[in-house]
Image (tube, rainbow, N blue to C red; front, side, top):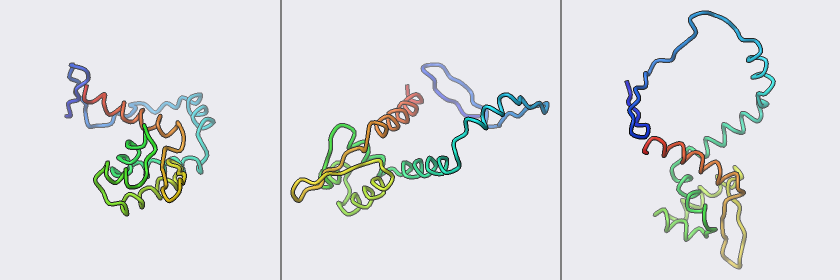
Length: 133
């Protein structure tokens, strides 16, 4: 049994998964779920997005870029990594369309690609914070 702290009240969470005792299909719910399901291509893209977000270094980079655009030097200093390692992770984030860049002379500044990236991060962090408060 796991115990989860949910705002001052303790809740026991059983590790088993409950299943129906009787086999009854609620066809209207099944039909709606099938109708509303994204295409396999969209599901694949979503899965890949979560894979990209499943890396601590990339999460740190995204967090660093929430408020300000930064160059690789700034990001590397912020997350205590080499510029080479940060550049590699930025390429992955750029390919996933999570960050964008602009050049100013010899300096390249990175920022979040759009507001959706900030929202994804905020929702995820909000969900995690629920376990702590």
